[in-house]
Image 1 (cartoon, rainbow, N blue to C red):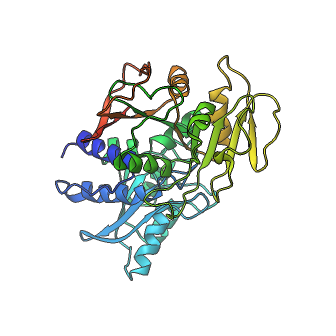
Image 2: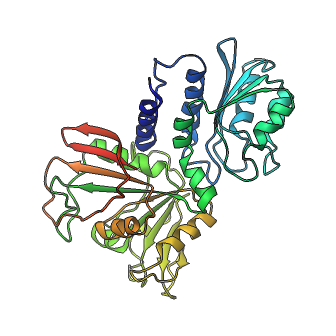
Image 3: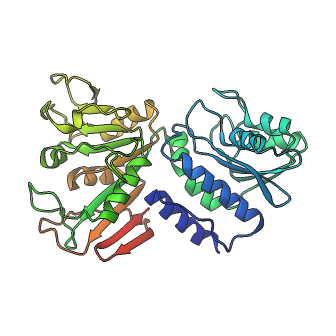
Length: 375
């Protein structure tokens, strides 16, 4: 299997929150790196502002242990893989560590992974992609080599770079990764004013909630709340399923939404934020994000900086065409998910202009319509 094809399959797994079986065509080291990415998928939406690094330890063609980083302040993927090997009664001395991202070499809330690998007696480290964090950026690889470990860099590098793209953006720009989602009718419309778009087959509901589960903040406009009165919670696969932690953010510049709106109802692990201009009447249990105006409403760029300062690395923008268009016009969208229904919605088509360089990277099709991922 070519690496571009592998990257497309990985992009679909990241988009849908579904399982990503390692392709049978992959063999040797490439297969073990793919297993490390598969392990890393378990940490997507949980680890920010840190990356969900996946790691597997291999000796004699056999996996000794696997691990993933799932929460800032908790052990990184390499440490978790070493612990997993120990729990299985396996000896990591002489093993190869396959890691999706360069091991850290600095003391943070946890110790440096380079030191842990050296002390465990790992003989070889294969890294998918270098860490752009200035505190690492090749330093981890240099330390490992200086201690006599064999080090290789760039195995399935394209796929690993795609996997860690949200972390790379956060490090390089200070802004979270922004995913835009819209469900449109076959006529390109959201639906008549005052009506929700009738595009909610089960497969679309599952994908929409998978996107929420992979995000740390959900952003919607005031009009979406007025029309749909959503809770913006994670209800898939069932209303009783455990909630994932993400912030619910509503663009309500003038503080016009009523306190009775369902989005303000307390939900454990899902705090509510209101993006406002000025000082509207406070709402109990809702934190106001005071943002400057940008000519359309609240400054979306300032909003993203505020969310990043709160540890948010992945943002999902839901809602209507106005908010979607504003994010696109400002160049703030990194990935666009579009569901095109097989039936018309009956409203006014949404005029969205995507960057010329973007291409459709992954697709899914059902009798009810088609899901596309654009980047």
